[in-house]
Image (cartoon, rainbow over all chains, first blue to last red; front, side, top):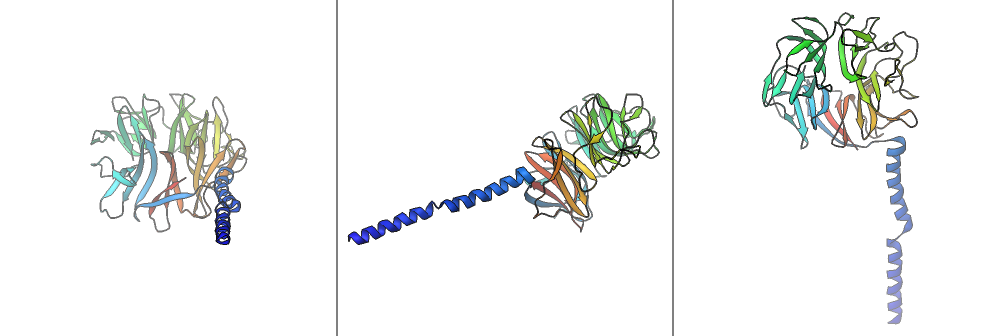
Length: 121
Length: 234
């Protein structure tokens, strides 16, 4: 019985040593350091998402942050939509028409001036 | 055109195309490109007054068929960059309110982006030398506040002409396309070098623009089949 108890104790001890394996922790740390180091030293920037926003035949001229909104400008059709957008606001991982009744021409730029959006194209 | 709520009003006395707008002065919104303010004269730049009427601004550019890609405000003057080829303009000019004046020696190639940041004005484009074809220039160059002449930004150069700049997390970023592959570089001002910041596992198509928004860096990418994607980076 004592031998079995000692054997279980040894197994538990070895298991606890395995859980806190310093080499494994070091590997994780190194991997993190490599990623962080890449960003700070060689400044690698991992792409985090790529979303198709306009179909072939579209034109996108500009993206710009105005009034805390990200605008996409040009003359473009989004996937699954027959209508062409000229300027759209990006939020909730989708493009939303802005303003809803602008449906002609090609937009190149937008800016906020005296409380109104000036749109050029 | 301008919005008022959901209503869009189109100006009828501005003819031609507008490529860029700048409203930072809060007095006028400047619109530039290949603008003709029909009732006055061909000018390439117009201004929208606080009452939302369009006026010509300053005297016309001297270049024939100028095209303005970028406009901004720096050192109490409006700057324009583009394809503005006359010897008295050389692709970058500023206005004293009456006429357009070449900034420094200008550049030998088109200016596509202007960005004031940290007390300097940065000009990006396809330039390789100054407007005298004398001093070597980078694809991004800087003008100090109160300065007269442009100098290279970085001891190294970007891989190809730069199409856009942005400030993200307090640092300057540049993008363009070299050999069909887009690039994004970050400027390390401490070491005065440009550093590639595209992950080796990502091969962008043509990169057309970058912008910082909501603590993330976004880019517009066009692939070989003509599809556009919005890409975001850490």
